[in-house]
Amino acid sequence: MYEKFYGLKERAFNLTPDPTFLFLNNRSREALDHILYGIERREGFALIVGDIGTGKTTLCWTLLERLEKKRVRTALIQNPLLPEADILRSILQDLGARAEEVESDSPTDANDRMQAFNTEWLEGLTKKQLLDRLNRFLAARAQEDVFTVLIVDEAQNISITLLEQLRLLSNLETAKKKLLQIIFVGQLELEQKLKAPSMRQLNQRISVRFETRPFSKADTEKYIRHRLAKAGGGGKVRFRSGAFKAVWRYSKGCPRLINLICDRAFLAAYSERSLLITSRHIRKAARALEGKEYGVEVRSGWFRKAVPYLVPAFLLLVILFFVAYKGLANL
Ligand SMILES: Nc1ncnc2c1ncn2[C@@H]1O[C@H](COP(=O)(O)OP(=O)(O)O)[C@@H](O)[C@H]1O
Ligand SMILES: [Mg+2]
Image (tube, rainbow, N blue to C red; front, side, top):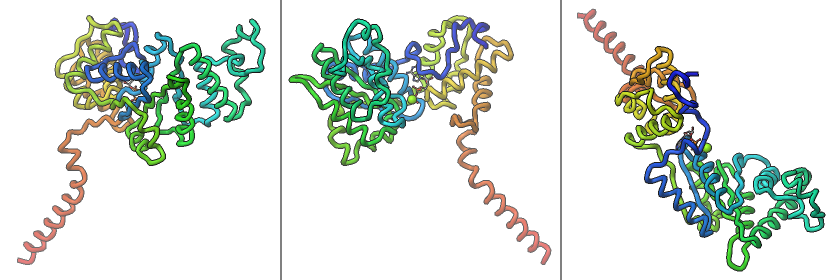
């Protein structure tokens, strides 16, 4: 809506986890390198945890993109709450498993190969059959020296039985190599879940761990500039330095909140046809978002802390007034 006015090719602050907008500070760049390095060396599992909106899904998509450039087959589980058979089916589908590869008795003529991505053959298979197909698929890839990576987003929701099955799958190995690498991505409680005694074996195999955190004040400003530049709007629009500070104050550096606030602030500034974004626009945006599910807090700290005491303090005043009035009346 406002893109044209600000000379942007697209909305700079939308909520899709698009890797083309990826901003990495030193800490996350290093972590991403470590994860990719660990995966390539097939060292074991990787774990990414973090609060809501701190960029976990964006990292998933970035990892997928980077891995696909190499000789790697990838699959992404986005919703581990689905029935286990559906999850296994979608893994096989993502990996591009074809019927003829995993059904030893199925024909492999040219016609079949034409339908490489036809996934009808997956319908109606039981969980056990699907696990079996996945096994065969992994073994076939290992023969070709192609390796396979599974990324599980929202992994705090995955059932313990499926977790265990995936671990067992990944245990299959040829003489030298593990057949499946897994990257678990989830909210902070995932780390707790993995500490349960039944998860010990899996937890021990995690060789790289990373926590996504909100940005610092300085990185918040760099992040905003980065997204604007990526959206093609380096020149026309300007943020006052107070506006950057205000974004940090209301978002505490959480990228999801930064995006929500900046997108609204653009709308507010656009309604005045202003090419300058000021702290007033940011405040207006944060107010509009306050009280919604987004968790933007506009009221200042001291006021918020004082709220629970306001009613008792008022009652106390009334009582004191009443007592004083009675006392005076009795004189
Ligand atoms: N490092 C980053 N670079 C660019 N955009 C990011 C980054 N981290 C988060 N975002 C943006 O913030 C929003 C929320 O990120 P998301 O990956 O969905 O968080 P999470 O999965 O942790 O809830 C998305 O719009 C995404 O584009
Ligand atoms: Mg996410």
